[in-house]
Length: 230
Image (tube, rainbow, N blue to C red):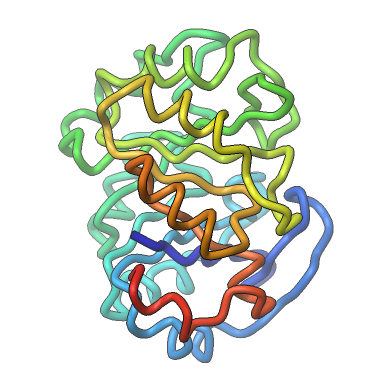
């Protein structure tokens, strides 16, 4: 399955290189129209994730636009997660708050189970083989395989981002993905440089869903060529 990414910053849909440099910006409504035909959207409020405001109205618009939607960005409490589900999200993505150092943050994860484990996607972001949190700035003393194994009891699925290649459109290392895929039977979505049909086919064969960002928005991956994978 292919999942387009919609990231919000400053009231617009954006794509960032390595999570920092703005590469493109566009309005929401034409973006939603353009993405018709995909079943799922992955929506992340970057401002909320950084604690610098938020884009709640735009996030809710996505949740009511006829897609199945997973939402992340600043999900640090049961109340925030519940509010997103009540706004129409089907799943919530939790990242930094899922970790207490190198261990699962049970004070956060256990109450979250009241929402239904299948509605919780845990984001495991890795740079140079280490999990990174808080906007990819804080490395933790564990790798993504160990993180997935430790967090599996509280996750309905995982989102693995290979930060080293994110936004660069040069591909994602399949060996790294395969190791994470083997760590848990939970559904796994992957992101970080996916940019051609061959990689989509290889990742699908591994049993992964592909989150598409920069390559989709720049036209390197043409919508017409993706019809069979939606």
